[in-house]
Length: 503
Image 1 (tube, helix red, strand yellow):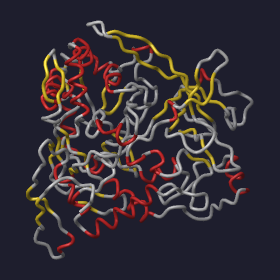
Image 2 (cartoon, one colour; image 1 turned 90 degrees about the vertical axis):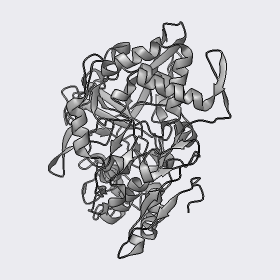
Image 3 (cartoon, rainbow, N blue to C red; image 1 turned 90 degrees about the horizontal axis):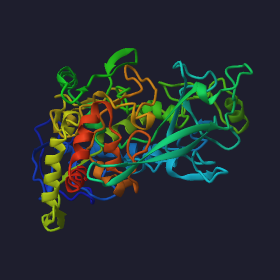
Image 4 (cartoon, rainbow, N blue to C red; image 1 turned 30 degrees about the vertical axis):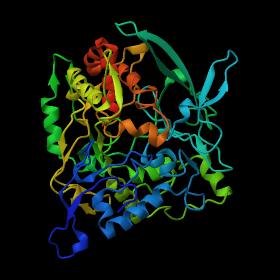
């Protein structure tokens, strides 16, 4: 049993032809102070490895455990130039951007310089990785001929990066009705060091006013397997009834075409993918060719020739389908941290009296419902009976038939375009999702992000520096809930945040 696992459970083997191929959790003994988040895939760990621990159905079956370990290694191992990195890339391993299967601190909050007037400049940096993806399009939605959808701000030695990102934060002060102040920060992006700052092969410069730029920081890899095992009919039923005109809420599904099939999107900030994008990650994020994406991401660009001069060979694929499916298995096999109910011994202050931490968490949960957060951050969903299927066809029945608590409906919602003149509208279309539409973020495990990754930056581009700011960035369909939260007394706002930290 994994030495980091703190839970006590009774695991019974089902009757099978091969005992090692079957695993069922017939009886879960949940430790005091915890609650199941993902059925028999729940792990009871509060350390920096809370996101990066194998689920019980992986740990207790030898073949699964071996495959998980192999996938974990491929996920974390640094991809070298000889092993397929480059010529241009965003990160040099999955783990470089998803440290401990979480969100590596993004360079958007790492200062790289200062303007003449003293304004701090943040962004890509000179080398290594920046733990962010920089999406660029023309304002008509078309990609740039010499770049594609992502600006790769890193490159191997001797190769020119496609460009660099600079970020300047604009901060504005606000106040709650009770007088407590808070601030929000909005990023202004500038692309510098274009390797080819022209439209196609013309002399026309790429002008900032003709450009849409949006940045994404890594997602937490919590509950990826459960997400892929979700009952799609349940999600579509949620969309059909997700109409609360009194709160301005009306969620909808994103449908995308992948592998030539129109499918329900679940994965990504805008539910723009139907799988966990392992193959796309190797290709676009690390520059490693594979069977699904056999061309280099800078195909036809000058970086190809520069890479050849640095010894890169383009005569074979960089990563095998079998290895990619092991990484896919690893992601599906990660356990989900249990919800922490709070200590019955730790004191907490609330409305001038002393209560226990657990009581404060319970009050925060009540406020979560009072603010109608649960209408989008749906507390309970179910996985389909047969579980999930990996990218090369391997089935994972252990993920099937589970009751899970992701705190998400996985639907698209308009998050507003007004706050600070922009709101959360990034003008980037993904499938059916418009620029102002985002998939409801699953909240399970969110309270452990600081322990796992040593930062509390939230939302798609990390602009929220804590959970309270993340709430106050809500607009559009989230406006009513934000306003209810804002009108709460300070102790109730703190209790609601405390509840989020318990998930």
